[in-house]
Image (cartoon, rainbow, N blue to C red):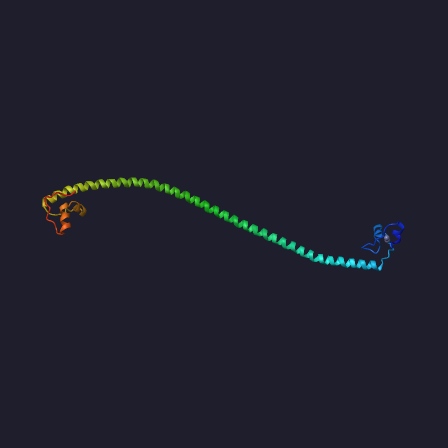
Length: 202
Ligand SMILES: [Zn+2]
Ligand SMILES: [Zn+2]
């Protein structure tokens, strides 16, 4: 049953959800709408209201849950950013430490190589000097041996006994004993007869 305004205009009269006036009267700003709402329409509207309210309540829970999910996700994102920054800082610290270690190892390597080169040069010159000293010493020893041998052979011939000259060492004395001395010592173990005038060893 249309209101009289709509009936005059011959247009469809529909109830408005926010007002007791019909939708057309609300649109045109008329305050004199005489739309009569039937009890069945009220019941339908009331049912529809209850249904919408139930959907709103149901959605409210979903909305709150979703909003709290947003907050939790934002919090997780902030925590992740903090963790990333901390991990990056730690990694950079490790990089700096490794660079320092590598740098000092390179410097040490350089110093050690330098010392090694110095040592090589020093060793070479010492070796040359030492070699020369050894050669000189050997030459001197040979001369001394030759002198001792000639001195001893003459003293042995002169005394006809194993008189040891003071400047002749034991090894030189042993070297200069005759092969017959060693032969007699090996067979009987007794002291050999004096070897006066016999041929000298070596
Ligand atoms: Zn109307
Ligand atoms: Zn109306």
